[in-house]
Length: 479
Ligand code: B12
Ligand code: SF4
Image 1 (cartoon, rainbow, N blue to C red):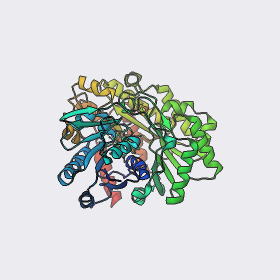
Image 2 (image 1 turned 135 degrees about the horizontal axis):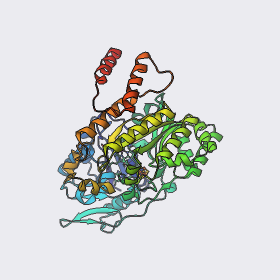
Image 3 (image 1 turned 180 degrees about the vertical axis):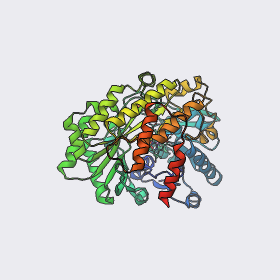
Image 4 (image 1 turned 90 degrees about the horizontal axis):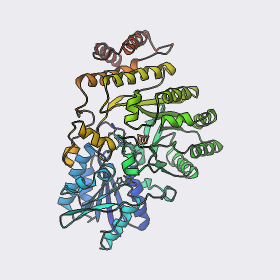
């Protein structure tokens, strides 16, 4: 049986470190088969290079690297080069970027193979075949190079999540991934990520889901989810869970069962997950009461725009009226909503003002709602908006090295004029001061809240004089 190294690169500095779930999931079948697996996580192991070089001396069969778009690519390339220079191991890339862009990934000289989409069964088959010296040409869901030519094999069917093997948490130091406060409420606790379903049945044009998951949503049963929650509470004293699912609430009956099982066993934890606006509209009072009682304190909701025209354009399949209905429902049951917005190609200044107007309406219904940021949309391979972005003047990165430098926070999109950028950035900064509640924290917040409210109602976003004063007050408070 062979040795396999799995590597997780840095995502970006100062980022919370979530469990490398993808690697743990693909490691499980390998371990069951008897292969030995070593996980090296660059984010939490400062001596990662030493460890890797040491492991490479033991003649591993393969080094698998999990790669998201942007910075992880540059670290992934550094590691791939190290592997090639110091061993005979095959370099295999998996995860979102190689899955969405397999051909271009394989064009890089240091990468031998890619695993597309779910790696749970594919990697096992690959390792088994490499181990026995058999041909891997016909393995579903891989891309590889042969005689200088790139081959991309047909895709593999999605796996049955209820047959998923237990996650081998012992391969990592779980303590390093437990956050000291609840992701949901920010209160002290022990917070961990969990993944209970994959995919999403919708087709938003900016999202990877349609391309990669083909609108297929698959899930673990309520019983499996609750058993995992109990295990994690028992083994690691977890007090809050942060679901990583794209759409945890797709099957409301499953959620209802999870909540009822938790309550029946008197399990007290907090949860946070993303949710679609129209799903909230489908929830009745009993359901909302139930999820709140069982620990659902926060929902992250992608609204993206307040303009019906843009919502249609990005195929979000929600309406502004539904947004307002959802905000009111969540408020009634004291579930905090975090509402996310984005700026898209084809969006006019008028559309953007509809978004700021909607933010104001949300705050009017629930002053404690949060709009954590208004992002400028950046295109990803494998999404419908990728081509639209090219049509709107965006020049996509030509190779992996260029993708590595594709920094979401600084990259300029040709359709975002200086004026539009100012509106987005200034509104994103100011929205935290848009306080419409009766009892603001202090007189300074009250004055600031009124002033920001005035600016908001009049669409005055082009300048930001108060930032200067806010920074002075912040520095003063810090001292
Ligand atoms: C948690 C999360 C984060 C975390 C950290 C991610 C992590 N892995 O620790 C944080 C908060 C840092 C983050 C940041 C961002 N994220 Co994020 N994030 C997620 C999220 C919600 C879960 C990731 C996860 O753990 N999935 C669960 C595991 C099991 O799935 P997986 O990793 O894909 O693994 C499977 C396969 O891919 C494969 N596999 C994975 N690795 C490997 C390796 C090998 C060798 C093999 C063979 C197979 C294999 O097998 C696994 C099992 O089947 C996903 C959405 C989602 N539901 O997946 C978005 C997602 C990955 N994020 C996304 C985005 C856009 C971002 C941001 C850009 C957001 C922003 N604008 O700031 C940033 C920056 C990321 C960056 N590249 O710099 C996009 C994808 C982007 C891309 N093309 O890479 C996703 C898909 C969300 C979306 N709907 O668009 N994110
Ligand atoms: S609803 Fe969310 S997960 Fe589903 S396609 Fe749209 S953005 Fe992606």
